[in-house]
Each structure stands twice: as C-alpha cells, then as structure tokens.
Amino acid sequence: MTILITRPSPYGEQLVYQLNSAGKTAWHLPLITFSPGTDLLLLEEQLKTLSNNDFLFVMSQTAINYAHSRLITLNMTWPKQIHYYAIGYATALKTHKCTKITPILYPKTKETSEELLRLPTLNNNRIQGKQALILSGNKRRTILQKTLQKRGFQVINCQSYSQIPIQYNGEEKTQFMLKIGITTIVITSQEILQHLYNLIPNYHRKTWLINCKLIVISNRLAIHAKILGWKNITIVTTTNKKKLINTLLNI
Image 1 (cartoon, helix red, strand yellow):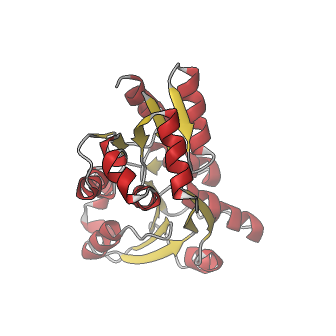
Image 2 (cartoon, rainbow, N blue to C red):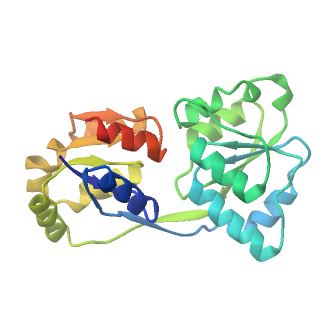
C-alpha cells in the first residue's frame, strides 16, 4: 500500500514523515495553499462589536493562525469576556495557544459543524440575541451559520484566509503517481477532493483514481466522493494526526 497525503503544508509533510517513520510508504502532494482572507482587515472592528458572553467559533487551525497574526500586527489581544468554540481538538489546542483562553469548547467525537452544534451550551435559551463571530476560510460553513441564526444568534463571518488551488500538469502528476503505485489517498476537504478529481485526466480517473481507497474525514465528504464515483471509502471523523496515522497503520 502506497499512500498519497494531500493535506496542505506543513501538515502534509508532518503526516508523511510520521507514516514513513512507522514503516508505511507515503508521499505528499499538496493541492491547496493559503493566503490572507478578504475579511482580515475587518477583524479588529468585528472583535470590538463582541460584548460579554458573546461567542467566537474557530473552524480550522489555519483560520486562527491568520487571525492571530493580524492581531499581533495590530498589537491587540483576544477578548477574554466571550465564549470560544473550535471545530475539533487540534483547532482548540491551536486556539488556546494563540488566545491563552481557557476553556475552548469543541466536540469530542466528530469534527463537524453538526457535532459542534450539538454541544449543550449552544442549545439553551441564554443564547438568544447573542453575537457569534465565525473565523473560517473562503468556503462558508453554511450549516453552522444557518443553524446559529435559527437559534437566535446574530452571526458575523470573518474570512480570515483563502484557499488557493495549486496548479500542476495533470498528466505528469498522474504518471508519477502511477509509477510510485499510489493505492490509498487521504482527503481532508471537499475543495481538495474536487481539485484532485479535476487534475487527473478523464481516462485515468476512470481506470485508476476512483479505484483507489479513499480516506475522508466526514460523512459529507464521503457522500461527495460517492457522487464522483468512489466506492472504497473509509471515514475517519477527525483531522487529528494520531487518529489518522492509527487508521492508516491498520488498513
């Protein structure tokens, strides 16, 4: 089994290194990179609108990294009087390191908007009329936004970073992946999955790509993969490196 890791840098390289160290053959092909988001210049004012007991949601490590860099530039600190939530453990840990805030609440099972919304503190009458600032990338988490609004939140979106597809020669990359014998592919976002699918020439999509084993991180991503033609799909409900590695070591 030869594994293709498509996570962006530096997370992809870290995962490949750990897999190779554990005796697996893994290669890295980053399919997206990041740049500052269009809303970063608004972040200062957005944070100032938050009052005591308002809410801030961090949807990825990249989102908090870019937002925190902006606050450092402004010589600002993160507000302490609000409630912080993260999409998963790794994002919560990164958010704590940046903000020095405790606690950062996050779902303990699946790293999805649906699981985040099931947290008891987001399901009570005290949230009516509260503001919620969502830090995310260029693809809005509409499930989170719409559900929070239905529950009475006033939602503010901050696109703190943008995802940019990395352009490759599809035929060259396909021939290389065939040569090294890629049979398993790890996908952590719909944008990455779609970009990979579009990158591979049509003939090789049908004869090779959709026959590879696909490791994805959510049911929603698995559904999209099935629509594209994949059948051999394993769902790992986290981007946590340890859990991803354990899954890959046991298949």
